[in-house]
Image (cartoon, rainbow, N blue to C red; front, side, top):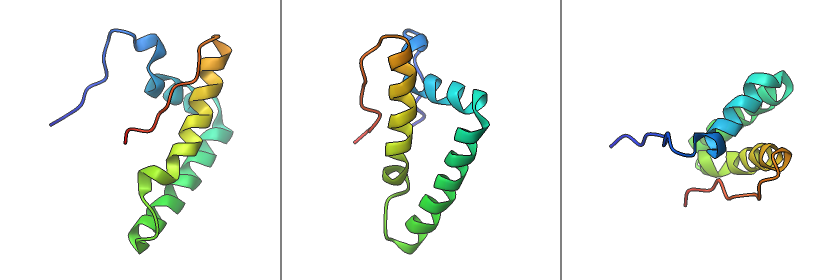
Length: 79
């Protein structure tokens, strides 16, 4: 099954905040790339979950974007 992002509320969907930040900030894009490589290597070794390794970074980016708009933080963890 494919999960699609909702069109209702698109202006506050955390995936959008994350995407926009990476498009606008090359430094964060490089940090994300390095984190993804590290997380993938750790997952292959069986020492951590790929998604869990990225959650803190994603949360940081989304919290900052929401804060700039006066919005409360929301969890990006999909457990």
